[in-house]
Amino acid sequence: MQYANATAAPRQELTDVIVEGLTSDTQFVGLKILPPSPLRLPVGHVPKIAIGKGNLMRATAKGRAPGSDFDRWQSGIDSLTITLVQAAEEVSLPDEQTLIYEDYFAFETFYAQEASNRLLRGIEIDIAAAVFSTVNFDSNNGGAAYSVANLSTITPVEDIITAIRLLKARGESPNTIVFPGVIYDRVRASADMKSWIAGSVNPGARVSYDTIQSSFASMGITQVLISEAYVNQSQDGTTNSINPIVPLSYIFVGNCQPGELRTGGVGRTFYWDKEGPIMNISSYRDEPKKSNVIRAMKTTLEAITNTRAGTLIATQVTT
Image (cartoon, rainbow, N blue to C red; front, top):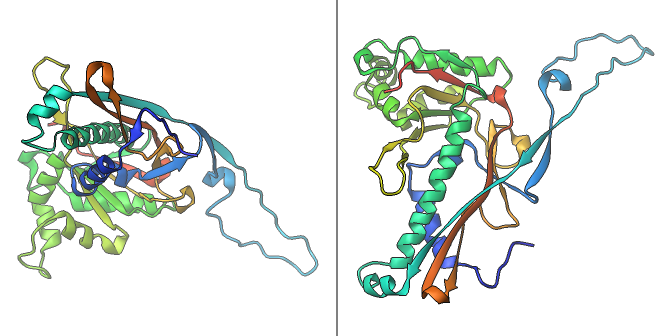
């Protein structure tokens, strides 16, 4: 049974607006890296079969004489404990404000959309912290620092191929490349990537995330994501401090899969589905203050479940 509250009512029309923002707002890419996965309880246990302990990636090779015993192997299973964390906030919309501004724009819908964006930024920050982390993934330096001064010498093609081969040698199937926005701009302008995309076969071809994806398609890459999300990190009432959510320090290459964990991938964004959708927006009436209140809430955990399925290319730059 999903959470219900007679006072805080889920707002379907607000959810519709939020879904439109989620599907059209390309600045947020986190949920394509760690796709949503529902949990029935806020604390869960997920079985995990590791390659070594599970005796995986071996080959049947031992000969057997007629009537002799079969060679037998045993698989060990670990479990991963997942504890979801709730983040929530509300915005109060006094009747006086609503009455003044409702003729100018869809007052309640605008603030519902902003509540959605705040939730999405929170998810994006959590996913970036999990994915662009040398605690979770190994990292190797690129051939040269990804600085503007090195546009003629950086080797993104070789760096990406090296990362893909590294993962395939582990038995993983990388399908995703994620660039921080600024690093993507430099890769797109680099002599190496221009030559790789155009060359002698496609003269005049332009470098884009689509052509980068198609150029690595034969190696299994199905999506190239550009993180363009920014966040205001200042405190209320202070000067704005707006910075990229994803650091410039790394390019991510890995296997990102939606659906059940058995389909693979580096991880998931787990959420408590009994409470509602991953983007949970409701509203209620605060009559003593003559206000409608929009509540935004998520109970999630952005978890890396397979560290072997991803790797980082160190760009060797931070600006």
